[in-house]
Image (tube, rainbow, N blue to C red; front, side, top):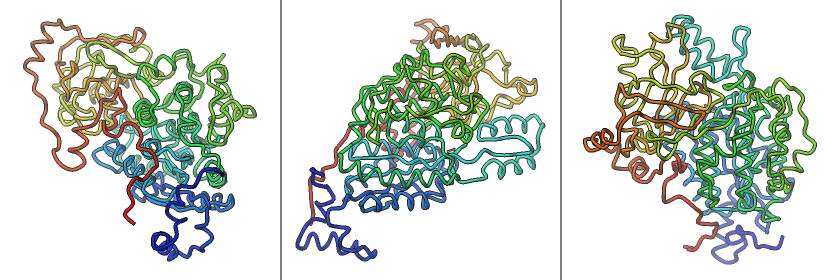
Length: 570
Ligand code: FES
């Protein structure tokens, strides 16, 4: 190890300063030799009982610690803000950037030479990676792993079934009592959502970026190999510190390209777009929303996983895991990208195999030729909007319909099941003011439940458009992330019920048939909605959050401040 450890700026000092730095640590029963030049490994833990997907992270941290100690490091676990997708209101996304600030400042401010990020539930991954990128010390991600597949009345179930259950409840096919029974059956083990929702997408993202050891994404949380994986990661981060293998070395433009291609092949969440753009912004890699469409184009959907397909993350692991998917993509990927284990992506893939072609199909006979994220442009979304074609209905991919506009989520809830609402299945549902500033936090409400009178006809999909997001477990012909959002006065804000909208996914357009004069008249009378908050974090967020096509980070958080602490009060 040639470079001086940054932790020695604390623990390596003599006199009063060194005394203070070490003495208080010793009250935890730490022997003196731990402070003599061992790499200090921070274990950044998002454990919280309010984040059930990360509820097993105390144990996982213990496994990481074992590995760190085995490799001659000194592990120190610390908590950061944890974002539990299901409980946090109004939406966990409102706090992604806040949590990233906590992570960034916690790493920089403390005597840490390398850090292991324990990530699980959706936003806990991007927030931790974003924060770590702005510091840029050796960093390795350990994901918590997916839950075991839910089992209910002879069927496999997962988070995507919530939307189906909800539709069946509103049409009387199942009862409230049935739903209560399904709850326990679905979440029956430690771990995050068992489908290719946002959490699994994020776990795959870090593995394809090279930020985790191979196999990170799919090992179930309840599988003993998840603990082994954590222990091996603990060993490896100590070596990374010695090699000074920082995030900048791993997160190159080519690594981001790999992540986009892999995301297409697994049918990953649309949230991937926003989070990857934000991570790129922090590390300083130029990435544009159009890159997602361009790089996904031609990549077939290989993983037959819910919500686009049939199987679950557990099945993906038994079929060979993400490495087997990546091996299928061999000819597309940038195989020379370095990963946290010091090997290239290509070297890691070499020995992987597929053990179940029902779960991971081949590029010659893919599960679906259509994959990835398609970026739409047009007079409704000048700066872009996204759709996940593998989750959409093929017949609706080119569709013109009458807009039925809801001004905000409250308006939608009030009117969607009004028997007098003039709507049929050919209409296009439009939901405004659920974007980054408008909601605020860009809620996952884009896959609006259809009106009951349409569901009663047996119709399960319609074209839906919003400036919000959709849960990674959701599906349907749903256009999301319309930019500029309604709250900043984009053309989207000017849409009215009765307008004729055309969605043309094949030609990547989303347009409203309105003349420039009509749009100008409507713009002249448009009034910005009142700011959702003036004080506190939400006030700061509304003032500074960027649009979805840029990753919805706060403008002042873009980039890095590095790991040097310039002032010292001791
Ligand atoms: Fe935590 Fe789905 S709610 S991953």
